[in-house]
Amino acid sequence: MTTIQENWSDNVGLLAQFLKEQDYSANTKRAYRNDIQSFVKWFESANAEPFRPDRVTVSDVVGFRTSMRSSGKSVATVNRCLNALRAFFGWLVETGSIPKSPVTKVKELGRQQLAPKGLEQSEIRRLLRECELRRDNRTQTIFALLAYTGIRVGELCKLRISDLTIKERTGSILIRSGKGAKERTVPLPAEVRRILREHIPQIGGPDEAFVFQGQRGPLTPTGVRTIFRKYAQIVGFTIYPHLFRHTFAHAALTASNNDLVGVSQLLGHESINTTAIYTQRSHKELGGILDKVSF
Image (cartoon, rainbow, N blue to C red; front, side, top):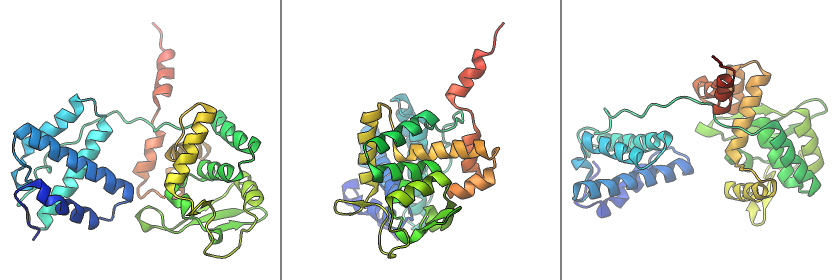
């Protein structure tokens, strides 16, 4: 049984233990830690008492949800906070620390489902051309792989030379540790194979060699985001690694006549329901529909 102390300051280890036992990504753990700590801060301010998990009620969680929304937090952020609290209090129930979770009956906020934003074809071309003009081979390869395969930035950084297969008419990359520790193979179109041949001549080299190197070893997701910020200033529009994944999903669904199963496999989604988000219309597309309405 996990012991609950009198004050939250004595329970910092409780949150650390919860996160340690979960198979979450580093980003999810960081977000959940911040979300739970935000709730603790709100609880102590709203109730004028020290936070204790066994003192939290359903009305507290509802109040926190209302407070976040009224302060301008997005629906997605509010729902993520609720998910963090649901997971944390569920864990406390499992460990016998509290008899029941106060989050179970609290509903997430509903929202209109819109397709995640992607880049325009002209914007992708602008980025690739800027890299070529600046002879920035490494960044050109990174942009091309992300745009043409939709892999995650963490998967990109873990790629090794032995994971690349380049032949005359075919090619692929092996993702050894995708989300959920799943392995998958993603085909490489001709343009990416050309860029890889030009910029990574040691394809077929030793297993331990990473495809992308930084100044102090393998390139990290933080290093990739630094590169993206640099090029965002050059081209004058916002870019970040996951935006390329959205862009690929839109393009792949369009090219495949909305083959959800196939594109889901390429993206490494556990459920095609996740992929189906990209079949929704964007704000721009919905606006285009309204522009055609007249009376």
